[in-house]
Image (tube, rainbow, N blue to C red; front, side):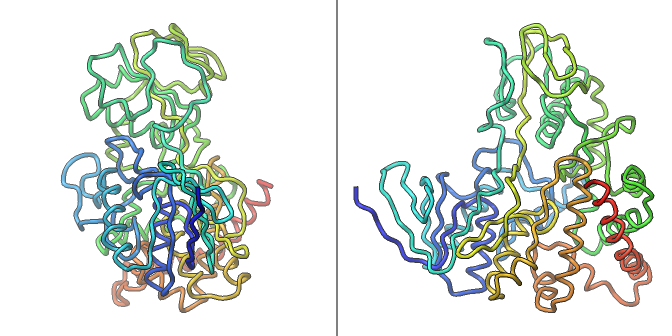
Length: 466
């Protein structure tokens, strides 16, 4: 079969959220042509495989691509997110990315999109359906938008064994259950496990019928503190001020997390259990109260195997029965390899440059690619913020985020881009705070006064962590 040759400026591998956000900024800020390749049949990446009741866990107002609003500007009036900015459903997000591709990207004539194709490296991809091979000659860069290795429950293979005949399923299977089981076993303490528990409780399942296997408790972010808009200034920017104060005044790493919890920056499900995980998941106060209704939480490490009468874990066993439904929520949403330079010759590797904000990061990297020429300058501006896993990774990610924010603040072009870009969320709130609003100015003063001491304290904690 013949090989087709395509000439373009940028080849983007992956049409997930990061690939789409990068492409959007390049289209907006340059005259470049783009080829986009992806294994899925439509854009959106892992959203194509998401469970039916999944939603964003950050406000829709700053998710998606920079040039097209996802949010309808509403607050939720019912449910566990009541009073906060709407959270788009998985179906809405998937539909949004398809709309962006069909009505924003392709009509420009500068984007060629190849779904259902495997990228095999060196600018070459092969159609999964026809076997045809394409060779792309990218005049500028090849962009890897798949490096963060997003994993979702429906495509995840668990690393434990399950006895034959048990009702074992990914979270996607919950809405298809047709008769009441003797109980539900939720495996995994991350955001997917939280979503599974909340969905069951919202359907009226007795919390005592839920057994939650939680290898590690997590520190969670209060979603109220992630809201944009003037009415949430004291929550969002106030939380950032409280955060810098907590860091600056912390006497030790343990004291830091106590202060962050006292300040309302971080939350935990059980105040008697010290969390050992941080993935950046957000939660509302109402959701937290619901989860605290579940009393049967198993904290004995990871599952090794599920037998018909017992569950074997790292630190022991618990009894079970064959009539329960076992829900696998153990997939980690984003798994990253070693940190590599974002810019390296003719390759761009998309990674996070702000803590747990991959979509913003992709758009920002695209802007830096468009606006700067020197590779060393680009990598200095786009220093990678490591994705957190262990709870002390919060320190590493926050230190890197603060360093980047300082670097950006020294560049007027970057400052203006952040204020104008809707994916940023907060820069405009800070810039537009009225000078005669004493309450807002006091919050900003607290943040400014503590920023340098906080940055220095984080460096001390990093040294302790080695």
